[in-house]
Length: 245
Image (cartoon, rainbow, N blue to C red; front, side):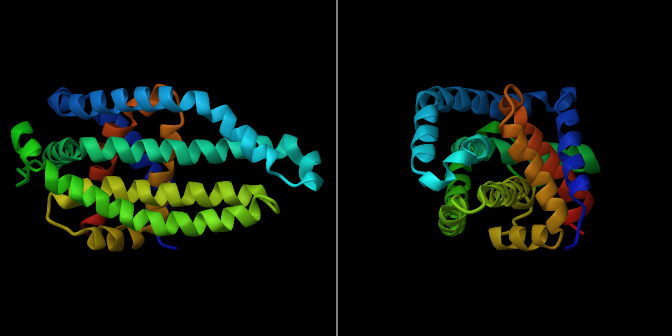
């Protein structure tokens, strides 16, 4: 498969570095505050349920697998983290999508040194909100059948070889994160979601490296608050340097 996962991860790292540039701070602040508020709210709501979910899954294991509980338990925790954090990211991106597009526009202008015809102001970003949110719903429609397939496979392999379930959910999440964030700079150039999928598929390993880094970032405390604007910046670098060619 074409691409380099390390290069994909490097785009995210460079995205974090761009957060420190003064010219971008006003456009980073809105998605940053939205992401922080949403993550705090949803983590608070789910924190009390998390241990119950783990107990229910562990109790459902077949008796002959009981001797493997010490191995399966961390895998179950990892699996739930992947699913829960990706779900949180979906909610955050739906709400912040217009402002993420504006941030991608300003990052690209900084990188290429010329104006991008896009949202231009916060007022225009708000005006564009219905279209942006509609596109986010299309991403969910793309995600759900694939998540259902992975869920069916996971039910089988949780009792046979649990690491496969965790790996499949992580790969699906990484792919969706790449699709999610690369869409922002490409949408500023009027590319459809199908065109975004085609572009990242042509650099599949790079895209998975980038999306996998974003997935890991959502699971790290403090980092998960700033991962959204960093991922938008990183995806824009990816678009400018690689995808648009």
